[in-house]
Image (cartoon, rainbow, N blue to C red; front, side, top):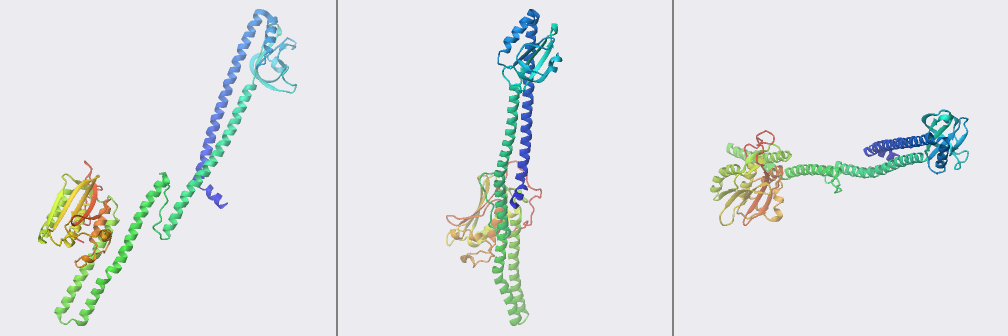
Length: 485
């Protein structure tokens, strides 16, 4: 009973009832319309036939009198068709015809009007048999009355056939509607139950659950794809939050412990103002390091929380790379290296300029720290080109590169390879670049060149004639003053 009540409350059940009612009414109206018009048409044909018979018999009576009329009616009455004839004298005695019994009022009212009557046919019916006919009765000269009609048996049988067809059709409509309802209800309820079960799984904390996709691209599949995309995004954000929390717990424990140890050591052992000053400077330096870590984490979190397309503008990639080159070319030369740029002409992208600038800065900083070759020329190259409708930015160096097994891992927060732990840093630079690339619908890809490491991010290319800013903010953001993380 509970399951039946559940089905009757579904939208599929209500829609099925509505469709059954609509189709039943339409079918009934159509069949009744056909039946009424067919009956009217057949009645008109009967009237026309009767009128033609009457005219012919009247002409015979005028030309040949009663004798010719009687002979003609007698001859026609012998044919087993639907025509009916009866001629009576002034006393009501039947002279000729094929009607055995008829209501007396029909002959008495010989006004030529069309009537539906019940009758019994001579030689074909028992005394109790009643047939229907349409007749006209006229009074002739000499007191004779002439009745001409047509049997309605075929017309009544056709009307009965249409009635049976209407009833059968209505039964078929109801049965097919019920079958359709059962099929649709089972299918729809199955998909809804699957969505409900997956939702309950997710509500228990298992964010890996996804809605099933049947693969027929119906509305449920489109809904499932959209919800699965949303769940992927939620899972990514939750996993990122968990990673940040775990990383903070592990990676900040050491500097905080070191900071505490220095303060305790200064309180126990420092003698004189200079020693206290030195302890405070070391504490301040450690605090600055912690603040840089927190600022980098907050910046990555803000970037990951942005909606794709937020604060986007049309950016000339050539000018952007020239700005980065002018800022870092002297620094690279001071380190004994060369900074090269290679950009295709007229290349524009729709992006957040300050964040892309910050991403390039982080990649250059990464190359400066870890991209030095053991021997040979130290060179950093920034290049931009178009590939499959995207603007591809590459930053490459001539260093030792990164082992393939670690190329995905180094993009996570606080990950630093063993060979790089001697260099200062927080392990968040590539994580920020990864967040910037995802905000722009791309990915940070790391590959080993020949020699060195190639870091690649891709942006949406600006269409010719497109607007400069997607939301009218002019591209201003919290990253107006880029700083390496």
